Image 1 (cartoon, rainbow, N blue to C red):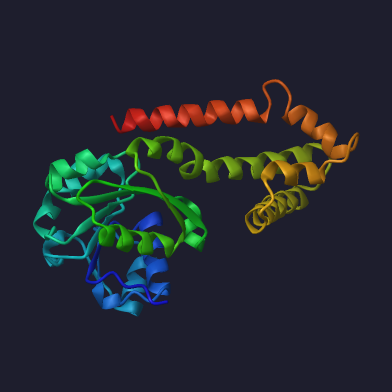
Image 2 (image 1 turned 60 degrees about the vertical axis):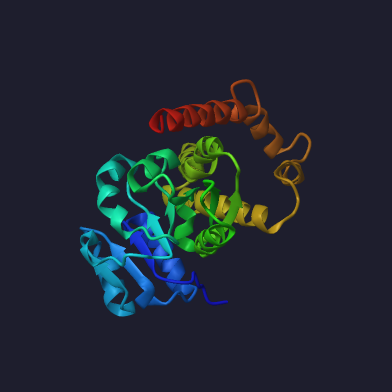
Length: 274
């Protein structure tokens, strides 16, 4: 099905996440001529994509349309206070603002763009780059069902989407799925290093770690079986896996470490957005 949002789209920032979203929209058939990208320093890949697909690419707000259907904010939260004010004239009566700036609250966006502005705040993650992201979104009271539907369609172009009524939910969401890919990459990194320590060649250890993590993840997503049951299916009583899990599931094991890690990330997300 072709992606349609009932008007033009403005993308502010075409970095890793903004670029991933843009690629997903184009792949899903969003009309390139309806897309306006503002990025003062676009990557060579984005510049080449703009030339190939013929969407609008500019360095500032001067060429942006005045009444876009959706404006997507995909810049670092640290520069939002500088980026937002020049955008206010480009917010129309029917525009919904979709922000993926981690830790930057809806109230902060409304402060710059208007108290009546329809705003959706979302937290995607980096697997969006391959269409396997997961996003949680929440909307303010001014966002209509149509607004939410447009944002949902844009986010689903790069993965799955869930909605929450509470903006505070996005802090633990950031800690679990937003930061989560880094935890998985660390697992692959540590598993490879442990394999080398156990006697494997470094190249083989890396291959085994990458393929094992990727394969287990694919099995998890394709199966309706809970992760706990999948783990038990691999574990024979008294076998090698059981010996390893005795360490990983012991006192101060993986569960305790991840609980503390997610708690720390949640706390930091709240600090950054306060």
